Image 1 (tube, rainbow, N blue to C red):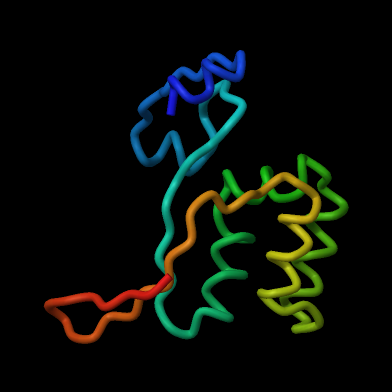
Image 2 (cartoon, rainbow, N blue to C red; image 1 turned 120 degrees about the horizontal axis):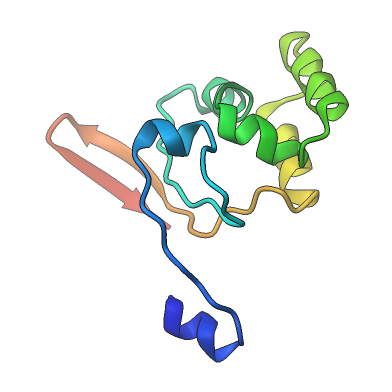
Length: 115
Protein backbone atom coordinates (compact mmCIF):
# COMPACT_ATOMS: atom_id res chain seq x y z
CA UNK A 1 0.00 0.00 0.00
CA UNK A 2 2.89 2.36 0.77
CA UNK A 3 4.31 1.89 -2.75
CA UNK A 4 0.97 2.57 -4.43
CA UNK A 5 0.48 5.73 -2.38
CA UNK A 6 4.08 6.86 -2.99
CA UNK A 7 3.46 6.68 -6.74
CA UNK A 8 0.69 9.22 -6.19
CA UNK A 9 2.96 11.52 -4.20
CA UNK A 10 1.51 10.51 -0.83
CA UNK A 11 3.71 9.39 2.04
CA UNK A 12 2.06 6.60 4.01
CA UNK A 13 3.48 5.69 7.39
CA UNK A 14 1.95 2.77 9.26
CA UNK A 15 1.63 3.13 13.02
CA UNK A 16 0.80 0.11 15.15
CA UNK A 17 -1.25 0.84 18.27
CA UNK A 18 -2.52 -1.31 21.07
CA UNK A 19 -6.28 -1.82 21.00
CA UNK A 20 -7.13 0.66 23.77
CA UNK A 21 -5.17 3.46 22.12
CA UNK A 22 -6.75 2.69 18.74
CA UNK A 23 -10.30 2.43 20.11
CA UNK A 24 -9.95 5.76 21.91
CA UNK A 25 -8.24 7.58 19.04
CA UNK A 26 -5.07 8.22 21.04
CA UNK A 27 -2.66 9.00 18.22
CA UNK A 28 -1.95 11.94 15.95
CA UNK A 29 -2.83 10.35 12.61
CA UNK A 30 -4.86 11.26 9.54
CA UNK A 31 -6.33 7.86 8.72
CA UNK A 32 -7.60 5.10 10.99
CA UNK A 33 -7.90 1.53 9.75
CA UNK A 34 -9.71 -1.27 11.52
CA UNK A 35 -11.91 -4.28 10.97
CA UNK A 36 -15.31 -5.12 12.30
CA UNK A 37 -17.59 -8.14 12.35
CA UNK A 38 -21.26 -7.73 13.21
CA UNK A 39 -23.18 -10.52 14.88
CA UNK A 40 -26.87 -10.82 14.13
CA UNK A 41 -28.94 -8.64 14.35
CA UNK A 42 -26.73 -6.44 12.17
CA UNK A 43 -29.28 -3.62 12.24
CA UNK A 44 -28.78 -3.08 15.95
CA UNK A 45 -25.05 -3.81 16.06
CA UNK A 46 -24.00 -1.40 13.29
CA UNK A 47 -25.58 1.61 14.97
CA UNK A 48 -24.32 0.60 18.38
CA UNK A 49 -20.79 0.21 16.98
CA UNK A 50 -20.84 3.62 15.27
CA UNK A 51 -22.22 5.48 18.28
CA UNK A 52 -20.53 3.43 21.00
CA UNK A 53 -16.84 3.59 20.08
CA UNK A 54 -14.97 6.70 21.30
CA UNK A 55 -12.86 6.77 18.12
CA UNK A 56 -15.84 6.41 15.80
CA UNK A 57 -18.03 8.84 17.75
CA UNK A 58 -15.54 11.59 16.94
CA UNK A 59 -14.72 10.38 13.43
CA UNK A 60 -18.23 9.90 12.04
CA UNK A 61 -19.24 13.49 12.75
CA UNK A 62 -15.92 15.20 12.03
CA UNK A 63 -15.98 16.48 15.61
CA UNK A 64 -19.42 18.10 15.22
CA UNK A 65 -20.90 17.43 18.68
CA UNK A 66 -24.35 18.76 17.73
CA UNK A 67 -24.57 16.37 14.77
CA UNK A 68 -23.42 13.46 16.92
CA UNK A 69 -26.03 14.33 19.57
CA UNK A 70 -28.71 14.50 16.86
CA UNK A 71 -27.79 11.02 15.58
CA UNK A 72 -27.75 9.62 19.11
CA UNK A 73 -31.19 11.07 19.83
CA UNK A 74 -32.56 9.68 16.55
CA UNK A 75 -30.96 6.28 17.19
CA UNK A 76 -32.44 5.98 20.69
CA UNK A 77 -35.84 7.20 19.44
CA UNK A 78 -35.60 4.67 16.57
CA UNK A 79 -36.19 7.41 14.00
CA UNK A 80 -32.96 6.64 12.13
CA UNK A 81 -31.98 3.16 11.01
CA UNK A 82 -28.48 1.73 10.96
CA UNK A 83 -28.59 1.89 7.16
CA UNK A 84 -29.50 5.59 7.25
CA UNK A 85 -26.81 6.28 9.84
CA UNK A 86 -24.14 4.56 7.75
CA UNK A 87 -25.35 6.43 4.66
CA UNK A 88 -25.08 9.77 6.49
CA UNK A 89 -21.61 9.05 7.87
CA UNK A 90 -20.19 7.83 4.57
CA UNK A 91 -21.83 10.66 2.59
CA UNK A 92 -20.10 13.20 4.82
CA UNK A 93 -16.76 11.58 3.98
CA UNK A 94 -15.66 11.00 7.57
CA UNK A 95 -16.10 7.23 7.41
CA UNK A 96 -15.26 5.20 4.31
CA UNK A 97 -15.42 1.42 4.09
CA UNK A 98 -12.39 0.25 2.13
CA UNK A 99 -13.11 -3.46 1.97
CA UNK A 100 -16.44 -5.20 2.14
CA UNK A 101 -17.19 -8.87 2.61
CA UNK A 102 -20.39 -10.50 3.84
CA UNK A 103 -19.76 -13.60 5.87
CA UNK A 104 -22.14 -15.85 7.75
CA UNK A 105 -20.95 -18.52 10.12
CA UNK A 106 -22.21 -21.86 8.88
CA UNK A 107 -21.10 -23.61 12.04
CA UNK A 108 -18.92 -22.92 15.06
CA UNK A 109 -15.95 -24.42 13.19
CA UNK A 110 -16.14 -22.70 9.82
CA UNK A 111 -17.24 -19.52 8.06
CA UNK A 112 -18.92 -19.26 4.69
CA UNK A 113 -18.72 -16.07 2.72
CA UNK A 114 -19.77 -14.26 -0.40
CA UNK A 115 -18.75 -10.93 -1.87
